Picture (cartoon, rainbow, N blue to C red):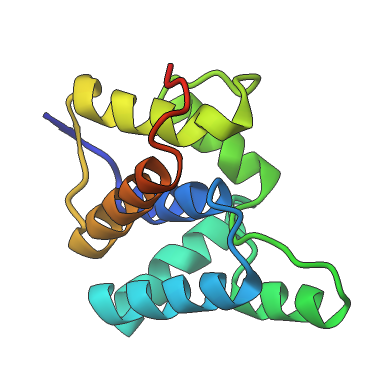
Length: 139
C-alpha cells in the first residue's frame, strides 16, 4: 500500500469536512482534534507547510473571515484540487457524491492513511454521510 504524506492526510481531513458543509465551529473542532491527536508541534509544522503552499488558510484566517461574516473552509480551492489530483477524482463530479468517490478511491487505490486522527475522522464523515442519505444513488 502506498502512503500519503502527512500533510496530504491532514488536507484530506479538511477536504472531507468541506463536503460535510462544516461550520466554522466544526472547523475549529477538527483543528483542535488534529492538533491533539498529532501533537501540537507536528500539527503546526504540517499546517505551516499547507499554508505556505496555498493549500490551506489556517485557523487564524478562518476565524478572521468568520468575523467578517464570510465563513471559510480550512482547505483552499487549490487544496481541494490538490486532493482531487492525488486521488484522481474528477473535480467536476457532482459535489454531493464527492465523499462517495473519496470512500471508493480509498478502498480501491491502495493508499493508506497512517495518521489515526485523520483516518478516524474521515471514516466518521463517510459513515455520517451514509447514515443521513442511505438511499441516495451512490456512484
